[in-house]
Length: 247
Ligand SMILES: *[C@@H]1O[C@H](CO)[C@@H](O)[C@H](O)[C@H]1NC(C)=O
Ligand SMILES: *[C@@H]1O[C@H](CO)[C@@H](O)[C@H](O)[C@H]1NC(C)=O
Ligand SMILES: *[C@@H]1O[C@H](CO)[C@@H](O)[C@H](O)[C@H]1NC(C)=O
Image (cartoon, rainbow, N blue to C red; front, top):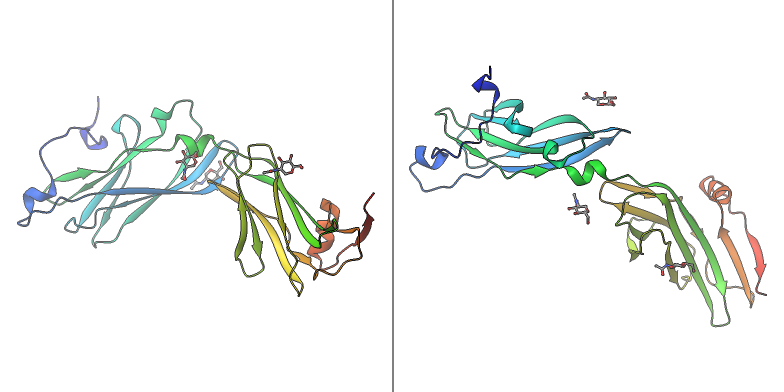
């Protein structure tokens, strides 16, 4: 036997808030989400429901597959409400569809759009960002060349060259599996840079690397941080400089 109280029946009944209000307002419920934590086979997700025009108290229900009510909260203000859920990986996107229902005391209710969480749950977070910083002089003056790549993660992956102040200087979205390459003129003073990789479920940063001002012996390249080991050295504030001669 099914208990009607446990179901968010998808009956498109003619009841809505506009009928219980004098003004002609069409209330809307928004649904938004955020992935809070990534576990090997599950994700902790925060789903936020908001019906700003609904007269409080508003009963928000979060409904899942087959319109089953997953959680419920009563809000006595016009504020939004959030539900934190642990969602396990499922084989079908139908099983990962949610919507919010906002109900007033009169029993009138309105539903949000359907939120399908398929993409986030199937996508993989980024791992192991490697960044190589090198200062080159190929005859036309020194240039800093940075190459960044993650070992895994779902596309699309956007790479950015970020300054110490958080400012994004360059941005690139290479084809999947390829590194991003940034090339720029060194400034008059030394500067700290890091590489950032981002897909839409995670962000990774390389260690901040000090790029020295652009005076170099002709035909030489200085490898600033060419391996994970030297990146570790950079983190502790030491730069293992190697002088390379162009062959
Ligand atoms: C969610 O699942 C993870 C891993 O299975 C667990 O560590 C965590 O405590 C769970 N959180 C909640 C709120 O149930
Ligand atoms: C960066 O350089 C590597 C090696 O030269 C190359 O394979 C890759 O395609 C370049 N990436 C971009 C986005 O051009
Ligand atoms: C993440 O990227 C995929 C593929 O481009 C896109 O379909 C999806 O809407 C994005 N999700 C978010 C939360 O930005």
